[in-house]
Image (cartoon, rainbow, N blue to C red; front, side, top):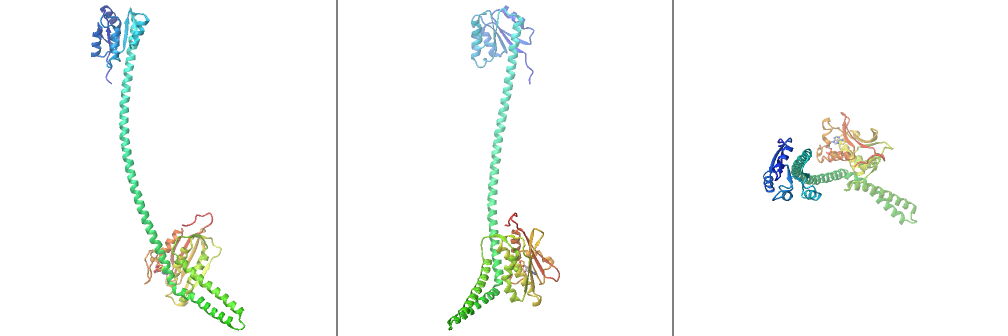
Length: 431
Ligand SMILES: Nc1ncnc2c1ncn2[C@@H]1O[C@H](COP(=O)(O)OP(=O)(O)OP(=O)(O)O)[C@@H](O)[C@H]1O
Ligand SMILES: [Mg+2]
């Protein structure tokens, strides 16, 4: 800050003796004094350099003090200059007139020196405080402007970044949509492959299933012929005919169940999630492969635990897993001599919180380096194999929160184990 200059005080009086007295009275103060001897001269000087205080004689020839004060207050560039009236007019009306015109104070002549000095000092310090205040206000409003500028540029930056973020989020949404569509495609392809695998596994059993259906159909035919004969003889053999008809109904049910099982496996559709007993499910699937095993001269032994905790999931999918393992096992033992063709299906509790289903065979086994590779899609050693059975089975088991793996000990054939989480009412269902 520049050092403050001494205050400039203008003394206006037509009487040189008064001017002299005033100058002497104020001589001890740190002021610069200027004088004017009439109203016009005072106005000119004030316009040339604004004083910090004007001591203005009210009664002067020509422009009197009141008129000078009125003109000062009327002009915007001089209206802030403080005016202190000095006059011999001590009446209240004159005082009020002077103050109404905008004067800051009033001193009557003849003045008491101390009183004058005190009033001048007061006015000058008010003036100094006022100008400090207005400097502070100016600085404040400059700061305000700076802040407003900073705020405006901040707002522009925020708007720019918001727009960039919006564009990025739109881009991400589009990418997400594309990903979702791609995922859906992969899921659909997987479902189709799983269905294809079921169809191919069932079709491997086609010959034996036809054979299995032929048995009840042949029995139905011969029982129907017998019933016909019994009813046409005299007297009609009603009781025997009724027994033949009961056999027909039983054989029809058996055939119906075989068809039911095949249709369930070939079904293509939504998941249907339920609690299931792995032992019961294993018995059902083994029934489906029983005649194929019989035709191939393979013994399928069941070692099923009873009262196992249930597992939760899609029954057809879990049956598909076991069917794949059984078809593979039947293939694996087919190269062995008939007396050595054995497949064991086992269920048991495992780890406290899992139920394990395993298929062990007496085939050639799997080389240790292939134990993981055979679960990769399209890995096959069979001339007509797709190589998807184990890959699909593993994805099904993992979707049920479980694990499927193979084990093999030299000279012992392969064992495939599937561990699924046991489900109690409090546990979270799979899928
Ligand atoms: N029990 C087993 N013993 C020995 N090797 C096996 C056994 N199970 C599977 N493999 C090997 O793993 C390969 C892959 O089996 P996977 O079931 O995935 O396909 P695949 O049986 O060849 O064809 P498909 O798609 O018709 O099932 C088989 O080709 C076979 O070489
Ligand atoms: Mg297979």
